[in-house]
Length: 98
Image (cartoon, rainbow, N blue to C red; front, top):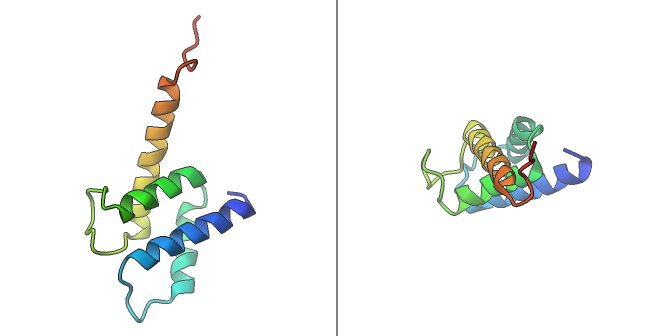
């Protein structure tokens, strides 16, 4: 991710954290660093889509009452990448005739 994308990713993660209960003992800065480190190689669009699905309760894994772990978020980010790539292949004009 570029510096601008990292800034947007930080905002998206902060919004997700605000939607779920957090422990009073949570070190928010360390939590943010951990999540950013876990998703640093992801596309911003996939991260944003994954966060949106967690906030809406559309992800079937985990407990919808709590913030997903960084591992759960990464799994969903990969799912969003796969879906985006599949949709791109199916888009009109994506087929190449040989």
